[in-house]
Length: 174
Image (cartoon, rainbow, N blue to C red):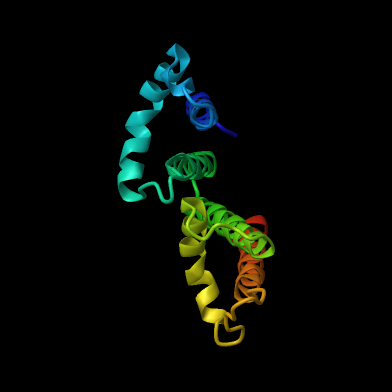
């Protein structure tokens, strides 16, 4: 059973996660971060996101610092709620795997469409996912004009790793 102080801290963490999500949504609409509400949101979150952004800078015009920040806060909430550092670390690995799976899935979808190879987001996705596809290049070499199967193999392996990690978490290792 959680004490009242622990419950309060967990509630504050969840509220801050909500504020981070609002900031991310505001960033999708030009000018929203410059509104009065936007300035308040930026002021409330920049102290937390700036150090993360220094470690993980925006890539291809895409700032993922808020995602990393949310994952860290969820892990902190798990640790505070359970007192188990292994559970928190498994949660971080699980969230990181989900992010990697999504990126590799986007790359696979890029293979179905003629994506502009010079677009910053296309380059970011390709660069971020190539380390996952590279181990499978020996089995599935990249050929001009053919569908790239190496990211598909990487997707399957990442998905299997995610299932393993979530089962570790669910069945008591965490």
